[in-house]
Image (tube, rainbow, N blue to C red; front, side):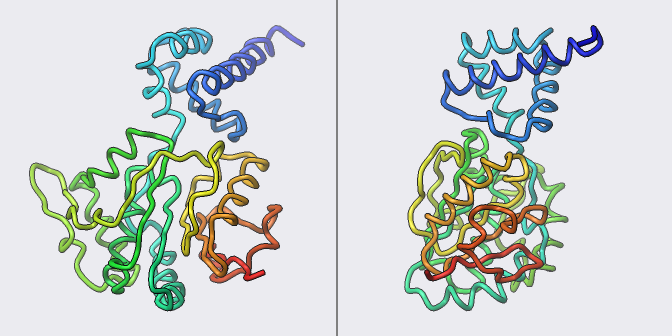
Length: 279
């Protein structure tokens, strides 16, 4: 090994040790996340938090409980928008909802809910389709700060133009402005949208099956997992779905090459919506 290679080799060791420390100390497991993504985020955290090395960051993580939520903010992605990829939500509205209407009660799980954009999108969609009152929504994330933001339901007004356009393209049956009030540069979404929502800390890496769901939406989360962790998450979704329940993934995600593929059929292939097989 050349001297040029040594710093990166040392950094790889530091990353491995830091992730082990994070798991041992706080029970958050990032060891099977895609390494290129983890490395990029940890470098950013080290620089912005003011540490010379990742080893110094690890020492702080172990001895200062206040460092954990700060680091978690770098390791978990909180980038989304309401009705993101409108065609996905239109497919839910036009193709999935007719099936869901046949159930007297429904359970919907938004896994990796971030700050709540996708959750509110689905609740609004279900309200517009007359299904909200018979539905219990579960919104989960590993980041407590993100869950608090989701439960607050407050977004910057500068984001509302995009949200509104997405809602329209998704087949919205009302004006998005019907669901929020605006003041002081912020949009506060109606608290009644949260009346059937349970917010909960849940990890796709370490936690178990989460009820029996009719629809699970987990979009743009598994792109950060390695293959083994993707298979674990998909197995968790399979075991959490009712027979003939639906699973929605992100545009760059797929069941096709997973070890859970045989348990699902393509329902709306182009929008990555799958249905669990009855058997």
